[in-house]
Length: 187
Image (cartoon, rainbow, N blue to C red):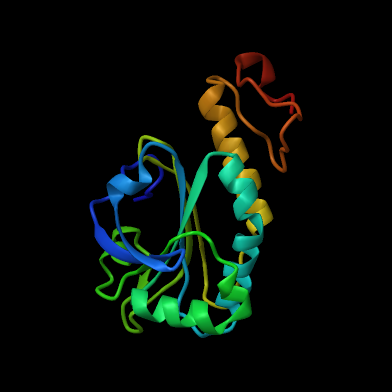
């Protein structure tokens, strides 16, 4: 069963954010667009490239009304140590959630049970806490934050424009489609 259009499940966790430890719950994700960005582990290889790419797009996402939460099964203490020791991770301004029990990782169905690590899962929630975008990659396949931005722009557009849909590779300002009988077989 897909998680698309389901509500985020309850959780409570500690995150490292801007030099402090903060509590984050499912309620923290509501009221705005949110991204939950799972990755396997701190102090690894592909993970810092993805988190750095996301940090480079964070200001743009914030301007779009989006908050980002990265999650791994490491602790919030490990996130702080990584933040303090890595130039790439040091530029992160979004909350880094520790999920050492795996509850959040299991809630989003991205836990690799035999390893105790998360797959590379990306989830976008609308302000009501409904999951609108799900992307899951194998551990060796890094994600592109620019494409994530485009997907969020499309999700926000269709939320604001009922009856419209965004075709492949759609960019803001480009033409959308209004599904109807008249379009059947004409695209």
